[in-house]
Image 1: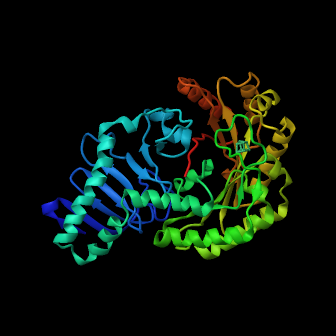
Image 2 (image 1 turned 90 degrees about the horizontal axis):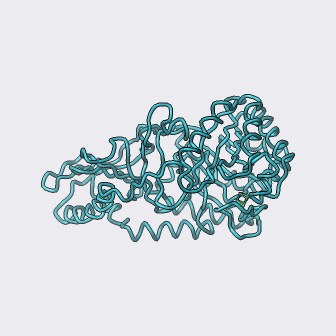
Image 3 (image 1 turned 135 degrees about the vertical axis):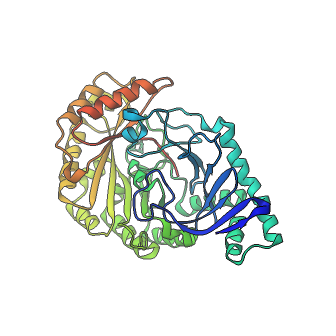
Length: 425
Ligand code: SF4
């Protein structure tokens, strides 16, 4: 640790986050990072010198546990503790201690406008001002241990960070418009790898779909991406525990493409290679692709070395609702996939299938009773697996109503139930 009294800053070189060996809790700084502390703010940087977190240190900061986090897509997300505590606290509806408040429209049930809070905006301004201080320090002499770090930070100004987020999109062929809800287990910090594009259904209600016809990426293309991702993430790759196979229906890419991507990514990227914890693999699957998937794929995933999460889009078990949202699958297919979800979860220790359903007050009348019935009579969780995520499809002013509806469903469900907030990378 080095203190620079004239500039009122303290530099902490490489630190190990409290969560280096576990799941993020209140403290999201897991892995290795560096820190700069000023009288008003704390700034945390990843191993490449890219800004990652900013937190206020004065009484005016909204809450001592809250902070701003920059994603690899270059979004600043405000991590709030939520408006309510107790039994309606965020931990009970998100399964995590934080509510990510996003700087773009999403389906959150808590419309906290943090980005119009002058204190939060001031923190982003302080980040720009820190640059001036670091340039001055660099000119006036830094302690030997801090030189490299400050150089790395100064090499990653706002424009460079923006260009890097564009570079990431170029590598994988576009922005990840939505991450699976299960990526909450690594605080949405994943290395994205596209093994397919588009989806099978192009449902009417969906706000994240692309217009692409479903296509599987060539092996050569997947390999080029993996090598480019290794270079892109650089030294900071060691801080990642999660791999996301994109985009909207990677399961439909089939066993050969999935197994190839997982094997190559594991070898070349060495995700979770520091051995602290089992690496996690995430992807989406459609009901159709899941029903077609063979036991050989689940067996291969189970042995892959990853803890695997496949998130399925069920949306509804009511035929009227499926028609209303223009999802071209039947109630029977949903029920069959739901049953298969339990079978896979109980059979394969390292594979967890989770499922999404919609919630919204304007859905056809049969939606909630059918969902209630399904969750109430579901087989209990196998090995604690089989989470169900409820994704709000809502109009303005429905937050409270939907949260009540969510807690009602949670109370009768035999499976773990959480709210799914759509988040991009
Ligand atoms: S809900 Fe899933 S399957 Fe339907 S359009 Fe959106 S991404 Fe495609």
